[in-house]
Length: 311
Image (cartoon, rainbow, N blue to C red; front, side, top):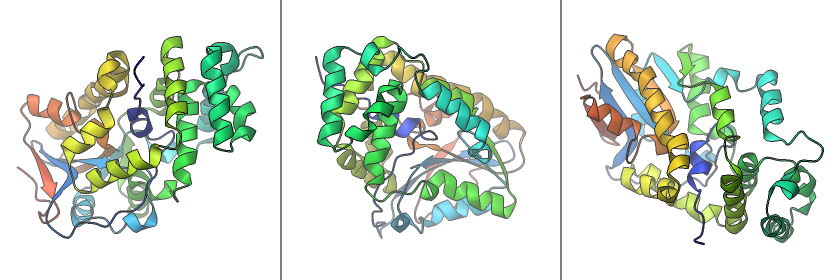
């Protein structure tokens, strides 16, 4: 069986286990950035591709990020970040992340070979102390937790992610914020996998422990250079082998978000900055492609280009 590639999980389920990476020096020359300007009837919507954990040397951001933020009266995210620290949400997350039945665990749910590979991988990473917790954690959450542990070793800080950066500033500046979907929708994505998908996810996690840094550095570099095609290639590698998973993680959510974005373009007078995972804005059936098919004028911004409405 071919190696399983579920890299997009690291980046797409961003508000549950945000990925981290080293700061890379901004290129001095003019280049694109991961911001797309969409002309509305009487306003502009700025679709901003996010990396959800960054280190301090990722800042200051290229000027277009600052221009777009200042231009926008409203700032929206994948889910409403003002509820991120709600104790009730944390409890819901824990309840859905863990096996609650006493006789149910990864050991009982996974093939013996896959479970033993997990045990061995944790031992090799000197993480055996986590096995009792890992054993009671559902596969989707386990994959993200272990990935986050690796990335935190690289010096990442969740509060420096692009989403939190702009949310914190929006709260301070009194800007209206919102979310394109609910937290409940995001949490349920991690519990929707059938037995086969769950086994593949754990096997992928085991096979790729220790490899996250290399993948992520490439992803961040391409993001900083506004290389939409490169980001799409990194995020979507292997998803063609799992069409149902791609549909749930990307396509279905993108289409759902269009239903929220279109009224902003048709009815709003205020400019809106929308910060979502970059994987949703690049490639086939992305939010950008769906809007272009509906006839909206879309322009990718550049480091030397001012954020001027495309009306």
